[in-house]
Amino acid sequence: MLDLLDRAFALLVAALMALSSLFLGTGGGQVERTDGDDYIGLKAAYEDYFKIGVAVSSRTMNENKEMILKNFNSITCENAMKVDNIHPAENDWRFGEADKIADFCRENGLVMRGHTLVWGQAYDSCPWMMYDGDDYASPELFYERMKDHIFTIIHRYDDVVYCWDVVNEALNYDKSQKYKDYLVYRLYGEEYVKQSFRFAAQALDEIGSDAKLFYNETKLARNGTKSDYTYEFLKELQAEGIRVDGLGIQGHYDFMHPNESIRRIEKEIKRFAPLGLDIEFTEVDMTVYNDIDLHKFETIPAWREVYQRERYRQIFKVYRDYAHVITNVTFWGVNDVESYRRWDKGGRNDWALLFDENSQPKSSYYAVTDFYFEAK
Image (tube, rainbow, N blue to C red; front, side, top):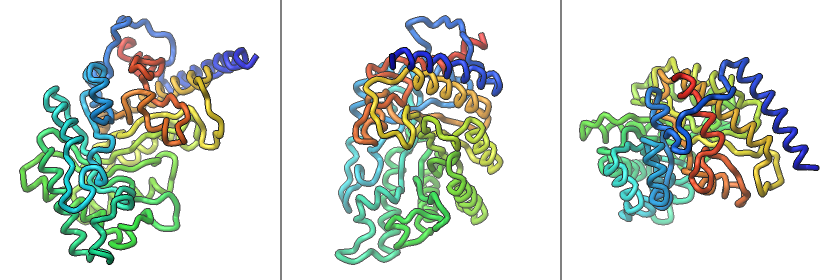
């Protein structure tokens, strides 16, 4: 009985989403495709729009080489360039994992997004830069270490990295204070964020690099306060003559949150585009759960698969409509089994990406590439 109800609900959801797609002008009807089993890769479908990227570890990269080369032309290190992995202690550099990913890109003609040079949460778990023995490091010592960290990484990977997430997720969700209460903020204030951008710009200038510098943030469509803080912060950098070239909007989408509607996503693009920055969606996925979901599915309910598929279709239509300002859309993980959504909530099943556990395209993949065949 539950299975029949689920199927009936799926049909209802499909009908409602189709009506929504027609209202929003995002298609959603049957498309005659000519790619068959040998599906067209994402990068080919989006060649005239923007780069298509994926976040990997060296293991997930090696296990999915053929699928990655078919679908993606941009790579992000999921964790390998974060301070706790690449530079866990003073004079202790661990380039191995990032080098493997960078070498793969060099060998296969892919570019990289450098992620991330400075992240307060990573500093909290790997705080050595902020300590001098048992005491906190002076600003002079901290910034000397930060500069060395930023210069070393930028110079090592500049030949393959076309943009850098200089700072990740520095801003708060509520009006209690503008910046997140990381230890690095409590010790050095907002200057740590601005100085990160200054050092990154200096590192690029020193080697004559044309790589771009991004600020990367999450939940902008969903959280108006964070969106306001981000807009104010970017304007502030520009007013002070501190170089910033782009905004990374992560895109870890919730399943059915009213503040992450298609119109809200579009509104955020419209808001930030006049700043003259490149916009990239840097960590795209979509859970099949709601925030308040306490249950765990063994298989994805049919109606949730339909809803997710049509939501992906609508979101990517918005991305294409703003391809004049969007330069990259990157998925956070190669397939469902490797998605952080599977371990973020205690290991429950989730189906957040366009490819299944065998790296085969799902219905959501076809939803975001149907347009290619509509245009033929």
